[in-house]
Image (cartoon, rainbow, N blue to C red; front, side, top):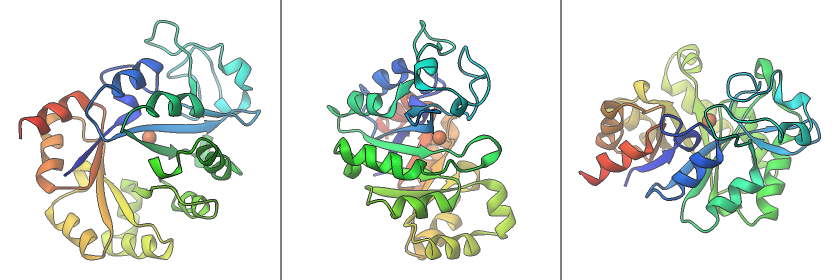
Length: 245
Ligand code: FE
């Protein structure tokens, strides 16, 4: 069965990565909840998409320039004065559910990786007994290699950015890199997925998923292609479309 991942907690239905989004996602028959993690200046693990605060919060500037005590005072745009959550808080929302965490490890401003973030996240997941309930994703493949050095999460997915796919000149080179880094599954933009792409990746012994399938047409195509999993800002539509068969 093709699994559904509620992207940033269902970003077109509720304010992305917000407490409301996660609480509502927790009630849906989806298999995964996707969210992103950055470190605060004092080393707390903060669930937020952008490296900067401006788009989604009442704050400004890079998230990692602020201590958690300051970040906790900011409100998330589009919410009733909700604040950002820590990784450990998202864990507690989903612990009573069967939903897996799909945790994206983000780079900072300018796509520069945060030193030591992978180790910190893996330690937090281990402390909370969530390693076997968490799939780690990242666009920089080096992030996944670093994750591997700190433990064994339930899964690892390399998110292949479209410019990387172009730069590589196609899937065979991407597959070679995935093998070199021992990454068992790729995630491609929904528009880069067709029967041939799915067959090529599966033929190489790797799993294949999609991301950014937000429109009904794209959601239907993910089910028709039979990818392992896909992320969507419309988990409500994905659930309805899957239920309709
Ligand atoms: Fe993400």
